[in-house]
Length: 275
Image (cartoon, rainbow, N blue to C red; front, side, top):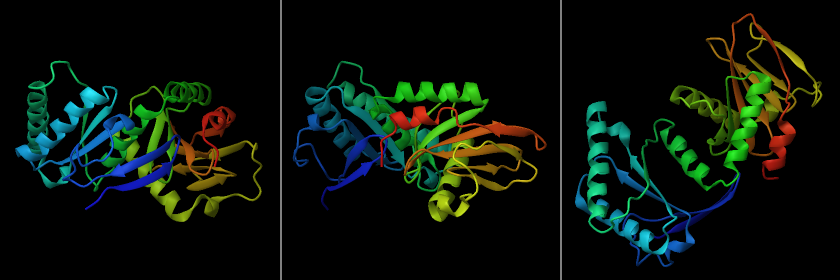
């Protein structure tokens, strides 16, 4: 097995090194100082010393050569265990790792642990957090989303990279798993069918539309569309460029009518990368 390099252009350009499980600091071929983040994936069922020892080697090397390196631990294949066993294994991995590296490093290190699985959206959510820590403009994006919510009365808004289904930023309100899962499900549909399928040829880019949630299931307004949820929320997708889009929620009654105005779109376009 060998290291495979992937490049991906989202809100920031990324080069991702996909390394085999037997990689070591010595066989990596480059110093850790060239990286911004280390993502280490460990099987949740693997409580043995070998993977933890290998991770400790990388942590020690990072401490000496790149103290600012972000350390992200994905405890993967969480679906393989029952809930109680899953939580216990996650705790044991966290605990053993903390005890091992403290034998070599006295200073407290910040490591982020995530339970992930390919059978839900937890992997996308974990990688979203990794991406956000690499985005210098994150505070400005979050403030723009807060302004958007304040002026549009949206209850929640995300800024997504559509192809990867990673959220670049959100407003200040907490991100709950159910809402995030709903976003990912809809983005999967958008990626599969394409936004052009729902484009309205008659709508002007600046046209205001009154949407009655009783009558609309999936209505597009030029580069925006709304989707009705079964319990009366409305989701608005506003495409900013080829892959960055904003996704908004409003909790409303079924009979309510709202006017949607893209008041902050120009601000988003100023900070989003061009395609």
